[in-house]
Image 1 (cartoon, rainbow, N blue to C red):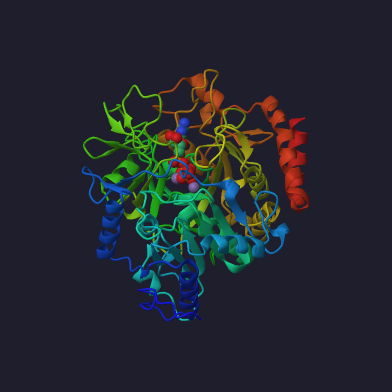
Image 2 (image 1 turned 30 degrees about the horizontal axis):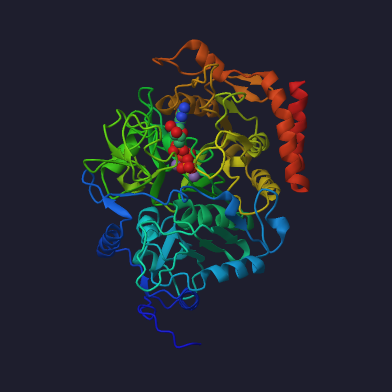
Length: 603
Ligand code: GTP
Ligand code: MN
Ligand code: MN
């Protein structure tokens, strides 16, 4: 070995041999100027934030304590699905919905990219834990990154630093997550506020529980504890160990009689999870508390019920459209400060603004760092701009949010963004039918990923970009879990759509806080208290079955939002057929049976 001396490399606060070896190897490969072992302290955070301000990445907000505005490179604003790979040993384990490359081939490409890629920068070693630190088996990870922005964001989004490292025994297992913005600095070369590389790779080696990311600083590509670990790698762990890692919010619904139900809901990116997770019910006496807004890890408890834990520690929420009307609790969370806002607009008095946040200010600095006025033809904020804020600041956080046992789930909602066809809510007949609903879930694409917006695609369980293995095996995993469980204790599965539109493109259902009426109906179905109509697609409420008291919306819109239209569903069948053909041989026969039965019922 070369006698490489990189300042900081020898200051490891751990004796975990695998961690020490890996850090040494990465340092020798990427040749940073120094190594910092991240401890997660206040002093360190202040240092990192000051460095980001100095570099021009962060602008401190005058109007919010310890909060910062950041603008990314205009070409680094969303997840890059085309550049995301599942490099399983066997291509059949990656499947038809993922990009695949042979692990050795991918590693060769990436080792070339990583060689010397941290020159002129600091390499940070971030120990972190997804989910409660007090878990019997804490879900550990280490992210190595050359981005201060990533360090600052990981501090909000994960339990990290010393408190996580304390759970690293000498032989502790952890997910290795390597990240570089891919922008080495030559001696004397000035840095840019948002370093990144035109070449981007977000790669996963599922058998090795390893993540390699290169070229992007954007959250979903760079904060590797989130989508990469907690969904793609964790879904593989979950397959192997008999649990579920899902793109789901977790909320606690409390009735006027103080009865508690926990609900998990999977909607594709930018389709309403964060909004529903923090919902303020419009129906008197009902309350919602939040446990998570994006990811749920669910395991069966000893009592046979399915328990959910949120692995995250913060919210990385879509900014545009968020305000005191649509999501007051998100607004209250960010008002408390300690947040990072990326690709929103900056006001002249040092606050943030985005489309949907009330009156347009006379002048702004746009996310592209240009002057913006109400006459501007461009948006002030990128549609996928985000706030990153600590979960513990949420005023309606459920007290049990950090309980490693999790919370028992009564209902699972699958939902998409569909202008037509899919009714406001449909109840599945049983688990298998519910899995069919999830497996055929469809949604219009949004700005959360690079690519065309508004195209209907299948997004199974809202996991299309996040299943770390073959989608057919994933469906089978869902089916098998249901078969092995006590059917009485399984969550009831529902399919929802807040986004159905009328002829003039207006939303038929007012949504947001009014969605509490839909939650209430679902819970009352579980308790055997609410009525529904049986249709070929499942049980659907009529307007009389929903609590619509005090709702200010045209009756014909509500009826149209709830409507089951056989004609529209018949038009859906070839799309499902196409999707199932794409899944191929690994499609569980039970889902094929569900599809045949649906065709029969539709006539
Ligand atoms: P990710 O964080 O990317 O996984 O997405 P998310 O599912 O958390 O999406 P989010 O809650 O941030 O919703 C984003 C978009 O959905 C915004 O444009 C919201 O205005 C819109 N939205 C959320 N709930 C509703 C609703 O009930 N009705 C309507 N019409 N729009 C909604
Ligand atoms: Mn998400
Ligand atoms: Mn969200």
